[in-house]
Each structure stands twice: as C-alpha cells, then as structure tokens.
Amino acid sequence: MKRRRKLSFEELIKENKLELMKDAKALERIEQRLESRHLDKAE
Image (cartoon, rainbow, N blue to C red; front, side):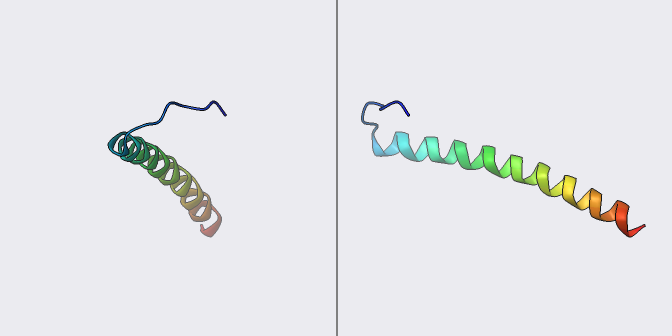
C-alpha cells in the first residue's frame, strides 16, 4: 500500500463516503444475485 500524503479530515470523510457508496452498490448486486438463485430453487 502506498503511503499517501496526509489528508484533511474532510477529504477522508469524502473518500470514505465514496467507498461506502461503491460497497453498497456492490452488495445490492450480490444480494439480488443470491435472491434470484433462491427464487429459482424455490420454484
């Protein structure tokens, strides 16, 4: 991992929010995939 210059607190918060939003979208996709598999098995 590269060492980054010190970021201001605001910059860290912005970065964390972006990461969380990306993660949330990825999780939603995974959940939808799992749900569709379960529905296929249930039928």
